[in-house]
Image 1 (cartoon, rainbow, N blue to C red):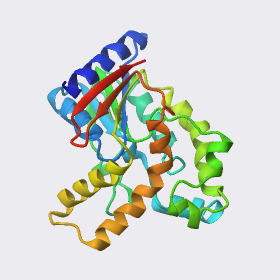
Image 2 (spheres, rainbow, N blue to C red):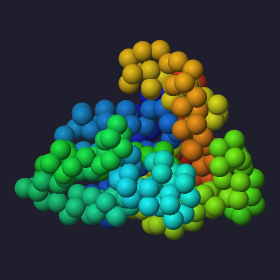
Image 3 (spheres, rainbow, N blue to C red):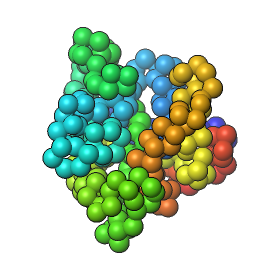
Image 4 (tube, rainbow, N blue to C red):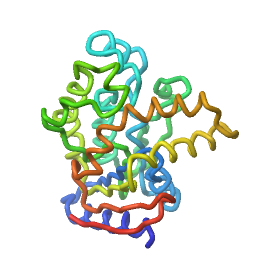
Length: 263
C-alpha cells in the first residue's frame, strides 16, 4: 500500500470540510516516521502546495531559557508542547489562507544547528495563493492526558529530572489549551503510527547518521536516547489512541504500510 494515497485521501476529506477556505492537512507521527519527507515530496510535485513543519516554529533559545528559568529547566530543550511559537503558526496559516494571486508569504524556518529561528531574510517565500497547506509535526492531533496518567514517570529523564511532575504537567496544560486551538485549524490529519516506541530511537539514529555522514559512536547514541526521551510520553500516548486522526497509517519497522484505520 502506498502512503501517498492516504495523504491524498486526507486532502480530499479536508477539501470537503474547509468551506471554501484553503484546506489545511496535518501529517503527524513520531520522529523518523517519514512525515516530513512525505509532505516535502508532495509540495515539490505541486508548486501550488504550501508546506512547512511544526519544527519550523520553535521558540528562540533565549525565550525557552526564560521558560526554563521560570517553570522548569527541561523547557530549554525544544520539542514538547510549550516550546513552539503558536502565534507564528497561526499567523502563517492566516496569511496563506488570505493570500491572493500576487501575494508573497514568508514561511517559518528554524536553524536547528544555531537553535534559533532563521532571520526573516533567509526564510522561504511562498508565491501567490496556495491550493493546499500541508503541516507536519510529531504531536499534531495529540490529546491531553489525565492526572492519573501524568502521575507516574515513563522513563529515566522524568524519574530523575522531573520527579515532582512539574514539567510534564505544564506540557500537558499547554497541550490541553493553546495546542488544541492550533490543531483545530487542521481540516484533516494523517497519523503515521510506528510499530512501537522502541523503534523510534532506531529511526532517529538513522536520521542522525544521514545528517552527520558517518556511523554513530556511543556518545551520539546516548545523546539521541536522551533527546528521544523528551518525546516519549506523548508519543506513547498517541500510539495508544490519545490523538485525533482521520487516517491512521500503521507502519512496520522499515516504515512500510501494514494497515490503515479511518475515523
